[in-house]
Each structure stands twice: as structure tokens, then as C-alpha cells.
Length: 202
Image (cartoon, rainbow, N blue to C red; front, side):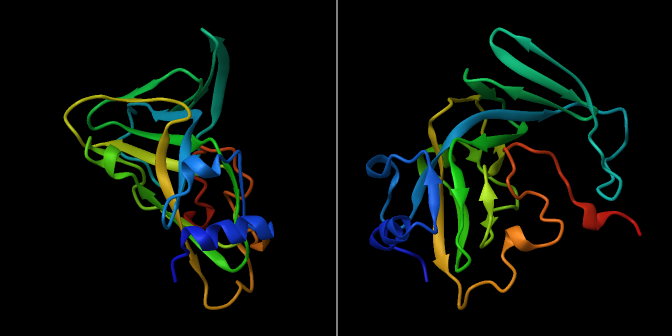
């Protein structure tokens, strides 16, 4: 069952569900909470390889530097930009982006990330497949942003970019996400690269 605004406020007050920083009056919807864009953006390079093999993918860090107040980390396949300046997402471009809020999920709720209608009408998709926030998750969520429109979209740090819908589980999770062995994205800082170890060949 999806939580209403009243239910969401009650869970926040209880303290086992946390979002910070949070401006409740501005971010709480009828049955969701708006989340805001952070400062971390990971773009992917054009590779001389014919394809990426998820079973062997390892995006090694090569170098880092600062330019115009922004921090840049260069990896083998991607570049991580940490900046409060607007980021322009061009048509057909894909980028991983962090959210501003740190989220802590209780063991009896699951979250679902959805786009905002006003941005969707401009052609912005907020996730490719990873829209579920597991019970017991803690960290800065990563968005998989794609511009499927025809015009570039300027993304600004702090803008409300997606919404988190919350649902009750039929019972509390026996093994919450943070307690799972190899919980790859627990306590992530956002815009982190793929860590799909269970796809690796045995």
C-alpha cells in the first residue's frame, strides 16, 4: 500500500525513516516526497572497445584535478564531475547523477523513484531500470538520467528532479539491504559506477 502524505509525516516523526536535508513543506506531495539534484555527475567516454562486458567491467581511477571551482575525477571509462554549476544534458546523452538528500530506509518500507511530470514533458528520464529503493538502504541515491527529447536540458543543483514513493512491505525484511553480504551501494555517495560483482564469471 502506498503511503499518503499523512503516513509519510508519521514515519519521519517516528525516526526510522530519514531524509536529510529536507524542506518538508516544499518537498512533500500527496503521496510522495520530491528529491533534489545533487552535485555529482558521471559521464561516459567514447571507448575504442566494441562493447562493455558487465562480467569484467572495472572502471579504474586514472587522475583527478580541479578547474573553475569544480573537482574532476577521470576513470578509464568515465569522468566524475563534482560541481554546483548547472549541468547541460544533451539529446541522447546518458549521465549518472547524485541526489542532494541522504536517505535511510526502514526495514518495513520499500521506495520507488519516479520522474516529475514537468521534467518528463521536456524529455528527461530519471532512471533506466534501477527505480527500487530497498528496505534497509542508506546513502545518496543515484539517478540514471537520459535526455530523450530534442533540446538540451539544463540541470541545476537543488532542483526538484524526482519523487520518492513509499510502500509498506507485507512484513519487515528478514535481511535488510544494509545487512546483505556484498551490499554494493550501501552508504554510497551517489553517481557511483556499476559494481555488479554477481555478474562476474566464476
